[in-house]
Length: 341
Ligand code: DAH
Image 1: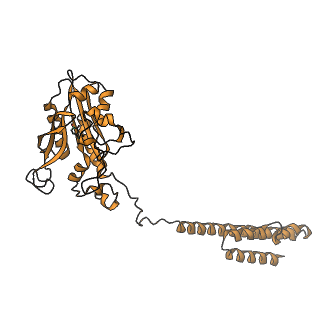
Image 2 (image 1 turned 180 degrees about the horizontal axis):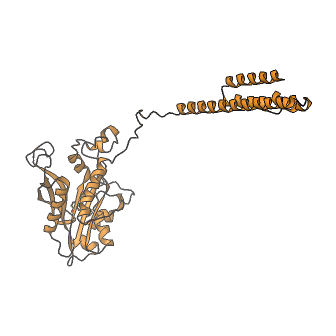
Image 3 (image 1 turned 45 degrees about the horizontal axis):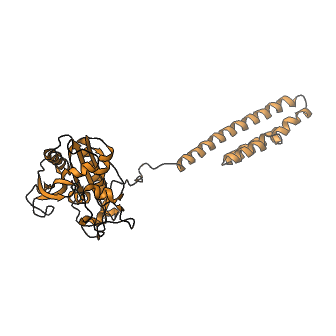
């Protein structure tokens, strides 16, 4: 019996040492120490032993059991540690690997220019006004004192939406002057940036869709001096503190008197270069004192109020600022081109 027990022990220890995973180990536990195991059978059969033998064999059997249990625990601890180590190894993160960089988009150069101009005027107390791109002929022309036979109303320049000629894609942001005056009491100080449309062929300087920014100031006692002061300030904000401006007489149906404003070239400071085509000046905007007829049609009494308006093409500003030579580049959405700004 003693021999049998030591045999069971030897065998168990050997098999435990060979077990190389936790599952095998658990199967072994059941087999060796379980109800059907040899050891349990021996302990169960103790009753048939003699009185002298019983305590000796009993003690021995319990010792064997304890020893096997200890070995089992040891093997289990060892295998658990090994499994843990393997898992950690498999899950290692290499912190020296280069990260995946998500490419960030950025604002289109047109949006950048519009935002910049908006900020300059917001800083001067102007509000932003927005209006429809599909406009009536009344707002786009009539209310701006553009009579029926004016060349600007020629079918060639305007995209009409219906055959009657009273619905169109706005050719300028100036109708916003009228819309604002109809809805707001003076003092008025607004800018209205937005898309405008003209039936032009596409080339390096023309596009059937482009952007303008309109400005309007109405209050009691507004003079040409206010116009010059505000626009000179704007030019400095856009092109730099040293920028000078000059006003040339011009004609627009909705302003009287009218002018065009040039700014000293920001690229050469006025000496003459490629940007200003050697003139030292760049054309920036059209402007003037709002025509009394326009005030009147919009419900504002020209005897009480006066004001000035201005309008500029924004693509040209972007092209000058960023030295872009072809207008089409601003509409093609070529990522390689746009990335430069
Ligand atoms: N609407 C004019 C154009 O499209 C630009 C313009 C000129 C707007 C003079 C104005 C202005 O408000 O006073 O050419």
